[in-house]
Length: 360
Ligand code: ATP
Image (cartoon, rainbow, N blue to C red; front, side):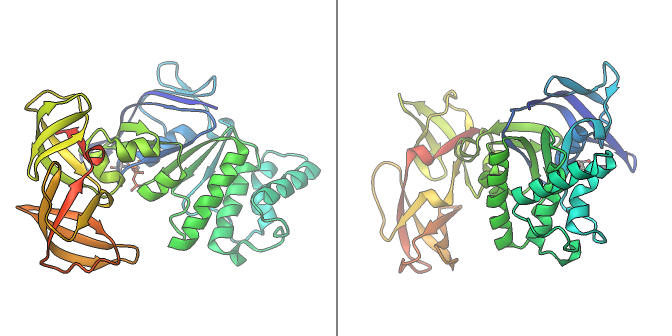
């Protein structure tokens, strides 16, 4: 089911200051997608999620879920959470330690006074779906972190919601389990064909899980797109830098060719991915470390840059190298078999298609 949000605003007054947690948010979340709200701490992700759920009352705007208006300041509509047909999974899972798995999952149905036999059937179907059949009598405290997460998912799904919302649901898991659970969650959600809204500040999680990512900053949605679009074709320095590591180099547009844009930069004259901006426009050149391929000798020619290895850190699948080029320090991924040493002169060739330009 599609969610359509228009002109949503929410402010908090705190210690004499006004905080715009949501600053005129317009957003369409397409049906049956995994849609992630990504942004730094305090940018308004949770406030937006809680507004959709109905746990937060915005100041103005409208929220539609499918054809139903669940919140409208103009029409004075504010449908209570329990009538919005949503499921929610929290960071802390919010599963009850004094209950067993069955009772935890059955709770939303018992609350709605659903028939006992029907509850048994639906709980057992949902537990099978999250691969926890046979765990019904297990006390919630005797589960691993990943299993608790699946119980929370089952409880959110048991009432067959139209939309499921997640607030940083994996952040209490260790790195390995987090990765496994993320894959599992993605598979579950695809099998269900449900609209999922997912909040995280973890860019890797957002890239791995989402169909669409909306990047938030200071109460606003500043960019929306597929993970690849956000990663490779960010429209601002903030997004390019937030979604992955980026070398940011000041440059100025020099000229346009049919396929590329030529800039003058702190690294010299470079041919870059096309950016339709007039000559003289100050821009930032964004270069990802994985696209700087460093060779053990100086190079000549178009888009070559020469520098000196300032530091090398071995991280397993690569060296993370810092290269100085004039006053500029660049981060590059270097082949783990490399025999380069600190102080060596190096040359590298920049692929124009990986030289992204954004207006400053
Ligand atoms: P995080 O990733 O840290 O959870 P977030 O992006 O989810 O952050 P929100 O929790 O939505 O951000 O908060 C947005 C802004 O509103 C922040 O500046 C926060 O301090 C402020 N805020 C949130 N809740 C309240 C509240 N109840 N009272 C006052 N200010 C609040």
